[in-house]
Length: 300
Image 1 (spheres, rainbow, N blue to C red):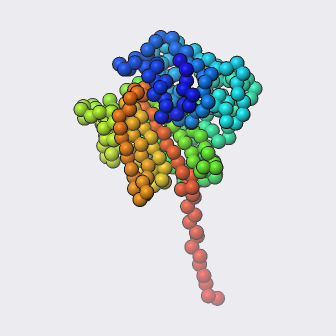
Image 2: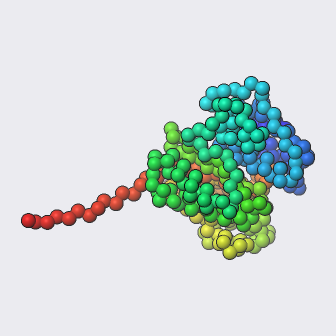
Image 3: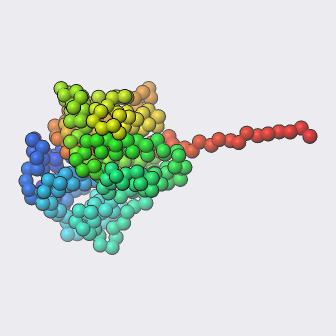
């Protein structure tokens, strides 16, 4: 099974259609992923690949990974990028470059985080990394983003089968942009929403899920705050972007030319296994608030 030449959230359907059937089952119990033709991969692609493999493994599929004998080196090599993300170390048991693979300073390595361990991970790893990459901001400044991902984990706990999120993040300092993606291989947001609104399509369910105050009410912890808070904090307050795909539902959210929140929801052709969420932050919109101390003056 060849991984597409360019692997992004827009091209992942090519691979997904080869490994997952229309009735949401693995197409084979033995699947080989061939990385020999890979020429480009975006950060979200790292998370998507990890999630697909986790989904297949959870269903007893035997996974084999093939890569070129001579791995192209250099900063822009997609295989080197995957290696430095710890992708091969996680799924092959060792890096392609035995001595040279290392997590880049601007990267938060690919990892699985359980719902039970999410609070500690967000506090000890995610928040310090995010604050550092934004110019050593105070942790309080990035708290709205940390809170959003805490709510995402609540959603994962609500609708995922194993309560695990596959996470990867990349900072592009020259572009003032941080891309964070998280995915699970659960029952998907549309199925959770259809417990309340059974006749919605996948795309309609995603649009309903991001409405403020809406909740599938499937667990007491998930009261509908998660996705609407994500849209408010990332898009409305900080001018970022949010992309969500679950089953055939695809939702994109960003600001329009009038700084208003714009949401586009549509049906895709491929079935994404679980829920994929990508958050794109504009680092120029984050800065520490400085409260000047009040000055006192006395006439002597």
